[in-house]
Image (cartoon, rainbow, N blue to C red; front, side, top):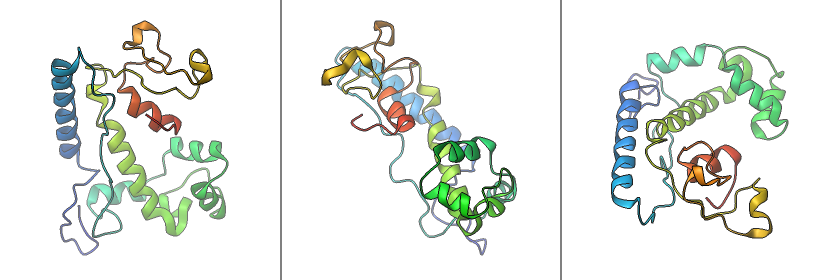
Length: 188
């Protein structure tokens, strides 16, 4: 990453494809290892993809790649999610800046643009890391899924395979981490 003065920061950039490719490769290799070593016992119930992501020593990445994203339009996917949420700090800032349906990060989010573009970039990076490992291994559900009617009454789902019909494991992703992240659930 680059600081505003062009000096290097000791932080890997979420805009760097080589970083992302290396993380994906390492994560997939780890999933293969887990499948080989833990398929029978299934002692591992989930993986945390990254830990305490952020930018140390700066407010955002000032590399050419990052600047290009910052000057481009805010993704419609993000604006739709904010509008759909209808509440929260990001929603309030968006509304306070005129609830624009399009524009670059500064036009849409004002002084919060730097923080928001960084959060968006880092979140997309972290969401992409487990993708190559998603069908290598799955983890058994050890917690009641938020919307699973088959586990009503607090019973714990213990299915080990998506094919077995566990409502928590419908896609084969690294479910316990991915589902909790996507639904805002807890206990995974």
